[in-house]
Amino acid sequence: MTEPTANESAVAEKSQGETMAWERHLIEKAMLASVQESRRSRRWGIAFKLLTFLYLFVVLALLVSEDILKTARRGKDHTALVEIKGIIAPGAEAGADKVISGLREAFEDSHTKAVILRINSPGGSPVQAGYINDEVRRLKKKHQLPVYAVLVDVCASGGYYVAVAADKIYADRASLLGSIGVRMDGFGFVDTMKHLGVERRLLTAGERKGILDPFSPLQEQDRTYIQGILQELHQQFIGKVKEGRGAKLQEAPELFSGLFWSGETALKLGLIDGLGSSSYVARELVGAEEIVDFTRKDDLLSRLAERFGAGLTQSLGLGGIGESFPRY
Image 1 (cartoon, helix red, strand yellow):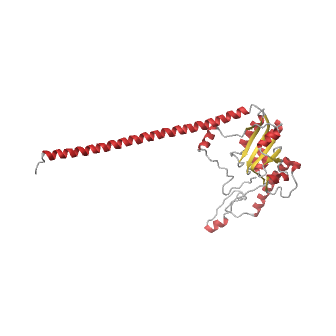
Image 2 (cartoon, one colour; image 1 turned 60 degrees about the vertical axis):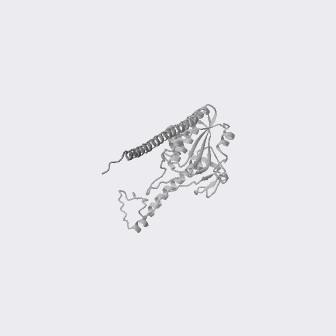
Image 3 (spheres, one colour; image 1 turned 90 degrees about the vertical axis):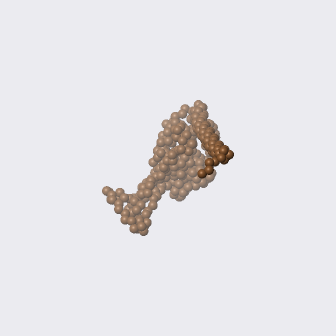
């Protein structure tokens, strides 16, 4: 085997050196790119955190300033506002507990000259609506303050049940209101069960305990019994409407049929006293144009979470499959 010459050795060493230099350069470039990427990621992470904290700071400042402004307004004569928005149900935004808390605070403020119930609700629980109606009547008698109901887009069923507790009711000409009636609904799956070949096994202690079971045929005696309850609740509703509206109501066969009307037609039927907004009522009727909102809100953390997109959605269902409840 022939030994490499000095010239060949020099060439080989040079080639090897160039290869090592190239590899070293490549490694240095990769390491530099990695360091630069790490720095960019760190900078973006810091920027995102700063923006998040800035957002939270701005939201917190808005909430605090809102409360401070409200407190400052309470130092002079004003018209108090309590809003009833959404389904009237336990735990809901328009549930009796929250609405009544706001009402009590509004009535007890020494600078309140009148209270406005601003209602935008399709109705809900007869019990919850009844609680609010009773408390409005009690508070206005105790504090001798006028109460106005201002109906916004919709004030149907339980919403109107609450409204008739006010001394006067106002709405927009395009508002929809009324629906003085009671309903109970559900589903029947008897034929579906037969089609699927499923046997229903229902065991009860009490011969009528399975009433309105959606997988069993509806018995006529059960239908009659439930209809009697609905009629009873309907008469309670009618009684409250007549008590609140009195001689203002016009004689109309469809008045208590469950139909609803526009504000313009409702005025002719005596269901409302006039057309106007909350601002109109405060300015023209109460004489205290400044409106202070006493609607009970969630606590600060809950409000922050809601605005930031992390609030939890509450279930407002009035019953699952097989559970039916009367509602206004």
